[in-house]
Structure formats: C-alpha cells, structure tokens
Image (tube, one colour):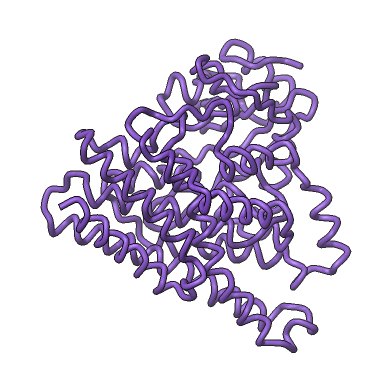
Length: 413
C-alpha cells in the first residue's frame, strides 16, 4: 500500500487519475493539519488544487488519524481499511437519489484505500456557521429531504424484497458499526477519558436506568434494517449555504433504523440550542431569535420528514403497503420517540468524550457558562431518553426542549 502524503500525491494523481490536470502549478494541503480543519479524526484528507479547481483525496489507513495527533488517547479501534471503498459506493448511490445533496465522486483505488471526491469548500460546515449565530435558511427542511429520500428509496416499502436484502448484504459494515455500537451507546472505549469539567456527570450518564435504555437502543440499532442510513449525520458533516447542502462522511453506512439518522442530527441542533442559552450574543433579542430559529429547525426536521415520507409511501410504495395507510401512520408516529431516544446517545457521549467538546460549546469562553450549557445538554438527553414514549409529534420534541430549559434554569437560579 502506498502511504500518501503531500510529497507523493501529485505523482500518484498523474499515474492513477490523469483526468486531474497536474501539468501546471499544483498545491497539496493536509486537512486537519495545515488547514486547521476539524475533519479527519479517522481518515487522512488532502485538498489538491490546480489552476482550474480542486478535489479532496481521502485515504484510509490501518489506524485512526486521531492516534497520530493525540497519542495519549491511542485507540484500540482498527477500522477496516476497505471502509473508503464502501463510502465511495455509498456516495454514488446517494448521489443517484439526491444528486444536489451529495458531492461528486471521481475515482476509487481499492488497493491503496483511496477515493477522490468533489471539494465542497464553496460551502461551510453547518456547525461552524451555527456556532457563530448564522441562521442557515432551510437547513431543517433540506436535511429532512435528504434523509427522507435516501431512506424511503432504500426501504423494503419501495424496493423489491430481494434487492433490499442484497443492498443490506453489500453494506454490512461490521467494523465501522462497532465504533458506534460501543463508543456511542456503551460509552466505554479506551479513548473515553472524561474531561475534568464534566467528570461529575458520569454518575448521571451511567445511572442504571440510563444504561438499560441505552442497551435497548443499541439492540435496535444493531438489529433493525429499515433503510440505508448514513449513521453519522451531524452539523460538521453537512456543508451548507442559504440555498444548498452537501452531505459528507458516509463511511458508517449500513441498513439500520431511520430514526437513528433523525436523532443524530436532532442532537446536533439541540447542542447548538444549549450553547445559545449561555453563550454571548450582541443582544438578548438576537439570542431569542436564534433560539427560535433552532427550535423551528427541530420541528421542521421531523415534520417535513414525516410528510415527505408519507407522500412517497402514498405514491410509490409497493401495493401491499399502499393498501394499509394505518401502517404508514403508525410507522411515522413511531419514529418520533425513537428519534428522541437515539438523540440522547450522542448527547450523553459528547459531554464526557475525550475527543473534546464540539465547536458550539468551545466558543463559550467562560468555563462556568460552558459547564451550564453542557449540563443542560446532558439533562435534555435524559429527558429525551426516559420520556421518549410521551413524545409523539414534532411539537412534543420542541416542548421537551423548552420544558427542560425552564426546569434547568429554575434549578440554577
């Protein structure tokens, strides 16, 4: 295997992908090192520019890139190197379903665990924009459309049953799934050294009732095969402007529960909300406006997903399912409590992760206010998890956030 770096990437492209013009001035930068980008904790990412444009080169090695940067957190995980080829195939499939939401992929080299894709640096990560208080137009609705279409068209509701099963076999993805199954749901990996700021939350996060419910959700994640899920949909993996999104990092893809993707993105929105409660704003009016925007995103994410999925079902599902609208309604209503439960998993894990707190929390300079934001996030996670069966509509999710915020603020005053 060729280990690619800034010195040998240009000769590699000349040999393996001559469609990219390297005859003139070409520059190579390492994303995560030279560019200070937060991406690339697992893989090695490079941006290659020529006079006409740029592309992203992604290489999988036999260890996490994080282990290079933070040796003290060296991981026992050895993600399978063929994950990049699976991601390449996943992106091709998703681009066929939602071409405007997925970067182009150009080339895959299975021998060297490399693929090339469109550089979407004309957009910005949603996380960094939201952490600055930027209200991205239509974010909730566009993510809902991306998830809904990719889910519905890879369900057995739509696909021939044999095709559906073959698709699942193509993307079993055992090695990558293990990261989520153990790190996210069990929170017991060697890299999971809790930051001192939130160490006091451990008894709450590992309370017996929370552990039981986490195991139940992990079992559902491991055994439900409803649709072809992204499995890592958060705001850092969604690049956006006011009119479009591009979704990246699909190496965890497999056939799983639809609500998991909804829950993971919901957790990203709620983290921004918890940060907004405590971080500085130019005025209280702007704080209220931004919080209202985030709650609208929460509502829209689930509401538009349900409505669009129902429309696909009514128009395109197999006859055996179209003939039973009650099943459709029960399926869609059941997504809401599952979404809340799955959202709680990253909410707990982020609070005690040795990987560091995400950007929306790190922008809070005052440690006391940062701690309050994280404690609110953790308490909302418990509210979602333990009260999820009472959450039946998108409005219920919004009310759960508001009620949790009010309860927390009463306690700290």
